[in-house]
Image 1 (tube, rainbow, N blue to C red):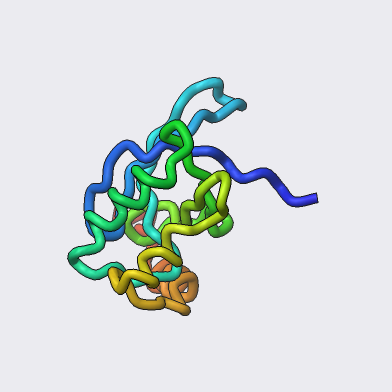
Image 2 (cartoon, rainbow, N blue to C red; image 1 turned 45 degrees about the vertical axis):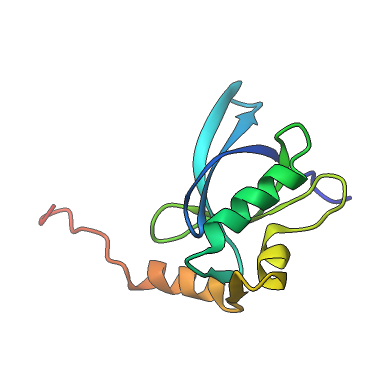
Length: 127
């Protein structure tokens, strides 16, 4: 049986590839806001308005399905995920590719993991 995907509300689009989302966390019994980086695509500079338009058209009562990639966060702390329409299943990344507002980024997860591997933890002695 497939794990149910969380339902989110997009509160704003802050950059051409970053969305601020809000979701309810049943364990904490509270709402959490977090940044999402659109997974699998390089967004062009004009993608911001396309994202806003897609979210307005496809949101079911302002809600969309969040499709995270193992809850991994990129080097800026954004969750790497895609959004999909609850009813039709159309994804934001597929839409951005179809209108030419983005190009494929097939190694997105490898890039994220590479940034983790190349970053250094501070030494305890050096702070």
